Length: 374
Image 1: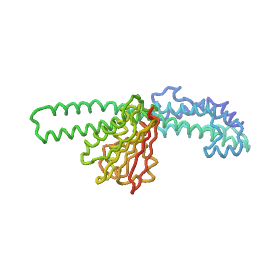
Image 2: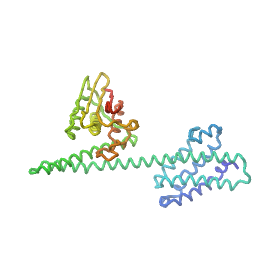
Image 3: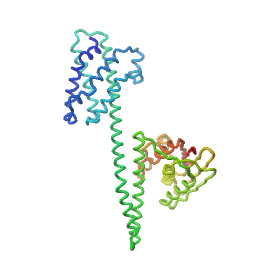
Image 4: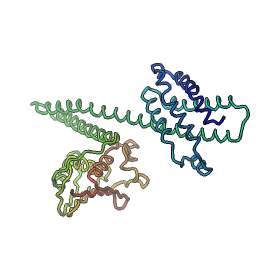
């Protein structure tokens, strides 16, 4: 009997073995019902049998072995993906989930071989096709499982970031009340200033974390366009940045019409991250230069600093989340989660703009942002 026919005729027997194995996976299986243990096993097997009965050339088989084609089997992929999501939900770890497919493969081959009276060449082809189908199901199930893990992590981070805001606000308000008390000496005022600075940095990190999680969960940054003056936003960002580093005197050049419709809050995020990044990584003996140019349709913002250039191999990932510079990784102090430039990129994308970066030892580092006015 051909393997595909064997699977169809004995599918319940095979699923019984699947259930028996799944029940041995502790502790997750202890609280699972029979239906949950059997899950999508039958659907996966029936879809695999149908896939085995479809024609496949040698070229297609060779391509499939490399993961390059032919087209996947929709019902097989759907069942496998649903299985991966379900196993994550009930508490299987990734190794336990993948072990089910290993056992399924072994069970089917063992039961089929036991039923054979004499081998035929076509049977070897059946085994190849069956292994291909199981490998495809395993890949889809693993991908779905991993996606659920990532989503669970992001939801946890979102809850963490949200819940951190309340205690930070309490600390900030308490320091404001302390400042208003009469009779504090210089040392006490210095301590309060440090607390205020620390809470401000922590607040910025939590805000960046929430924006990162929002994008990871598939939601682009919401923006509300209103008429604003970009030059004013640039001056405000410079003032805020210099408050933390009073020794730096940035050079600001503004020309042309810089009025347009943007989300002021998001633009402030963009500017504070770019200017803060330039101040953090720029050479202390050189100025940070901010150039803003406007025309009828768009504004172009350039933030430039001298200092250690960005490594060539890091340029391509500099806007990726949780990527930090080599100097930070070597232990230099930082208040960044590695999300600043990622947030900048998200703000630019939300405004349908573009951002590029150039960096070398002679010319320094320049971030160039182009934003349409409407």
